[in-house]
Image (cartoon, rainbow, N blue to C red; front, side, top):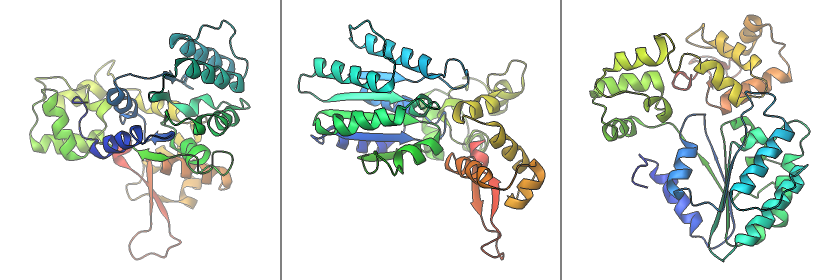
Length: 324
């Protein structure tokens, strides 16, 4: 646990839930690259009864239901399942998980970690129904089970899990939103990694990278802030040159509309009204636009505000610069 920078409140919550003596269903969400997976794996030191990471949606073929199920089956095999028959549905896949956990149960706490949960909910897959069945019909009754799920698609985590009105309503025992590092945590991170930066440079770096540990971890020792930023974004074959496209395509199933909105907002520092967004993007101003704006807001890509002196109807949307 010594390698975790900051995250004291989150560690305290995880510790309390681990030692609660009852079943726990915990959702951890936050923007991509913020360190959700690192926190869970470092805190539990990979001592999981079962762990699975969904296939990315960037590759449309690998993100399909059959490929997701096959990948889940391989994770079951990795953690000790000896059956040969691959599941043909998520109901069957979670049934196999119940069987595996039952076989391994020695009375001690069983931590199950499923990472990038939203990617598993492909169209028509029946994934959420199967997850409901797994938890409501079995997991909730097992005092030693701790189910931890993570997701970067915050709109999915919010609508389909945290604020679900169906079978998972009120089933979560804890929700943790992992935020970017504070300035103080950034300073701790650089010091722990032998990166020598002045306070001014740490602040300027924060304005560029938004306190995202994944990006900060690319910094090289012995280089100035300007040199590191140049290496990451501007040099030929820079590591983060295509991050914008990769980020959106990994977080949103249909990212094109969101990218249009973000590019439009990038043209105006003070932000745009809904009507101005429609004019600049040619997106129809109906429910689809509302859903896209809500998804971007929940994912911390934009903020909504009313300019000083304007009526409450004059809502503006502007980029959350630290998240882009």
